[in-house]
Amino acid sequence: MNTLKRVALAMLALSIPSSTMAAGELVLVAGASGQSGRPTIDQLQDAGYKVRALVRDASKGADLGVELAVGDVMKPETLGAALKDVTYVISTIGAGQGGYSAEQVEFHGLANLSSAAKAAGVKQFVLMSSLKAGSEDKNEFLNARRGMLLMWKGKGEQALRDTGIAYTIIRPGGLLPRPNMPCELGKVGLTLAPKNTLTGGAVCRADVAAVMIAALGDADAVGKTIELIQDEKAAPNNWRGTFRTFQKD
Ligand SMILES: NC(=O)c1ccc[n+]([C@@H]2O[C@H](COP(=O)([O-])OP(=O)(O)OC[C@H]3O[C@@H](n4cnc5c(N)ncnc54)[C@H](OP(=O)(O)O)[C@@H]3O)[C@@H](O)[C@H]2O)c1
Image: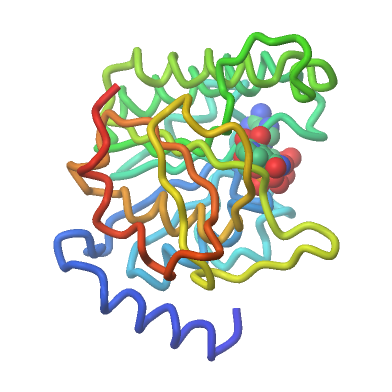
């Protein structure tokens, strides 16, 4: 991240209520080597958190500039050490090119990680899920083409809720940037909505990261599943302070 961006983020952090500011607490980012994990780590560091990155392959985390924990959510025996002294978990894991199925990563893997977090005494677990998580509609693209991905994401969400850990689930729409569709943190407003209400829309990965980080330690965000897309007509930061308007699951 360049210096200008860091200064802008630091100024943004100053505008956040002090109750939600970090006090050097340790956050484990799962999916750290992925496209959403990386901006999440940058922003956590800018907000004053200590960060540990869960990576399957240490070489993929070498450029992250944070402590690494080598582990795999499909191998529960690797998760205890990764979670030692962790206050918060943010998970951006997703079944992609890693050799596992959607059922394995999005359901069993997430269940492994969330129950290990509960056992380790983690204070809050923030999950990056997806719009339409839980849909069993076989005509949905991600169900038809990706092994019932949305259905397994819904089961993964429920496994997290069932652990009894304090959680926040953020369900973004289609993630940006994409080729010819650039995006930048905090440039546009965001629409946050109750679960199972949005059916489409896009959002910048960096903005998803900002929302997940804002949820850390915020009692108004706990026990809630919130959908998220961008709204180019709304003012940047329009969403801050709005977690309290959503009902608990
Ligand atoms: N693409 C979209 O438009 C969209 C929309 C809404 C929601 N989402 C969801 O948002 C999340 C983040 O998306 P993204 O595009 O940023 O993901 P991504 O770049 O594919 O990153 C996924 C991460 O998960 C890690 N991972 C996979 N299997 C793992 C395992 N068994 N143990 C530990 N880590 C594992 C990967 O590690 P490796 O580097 O080792 O493979 C990678 O770091 C995903 O759940 C995705 O489904 C995506």
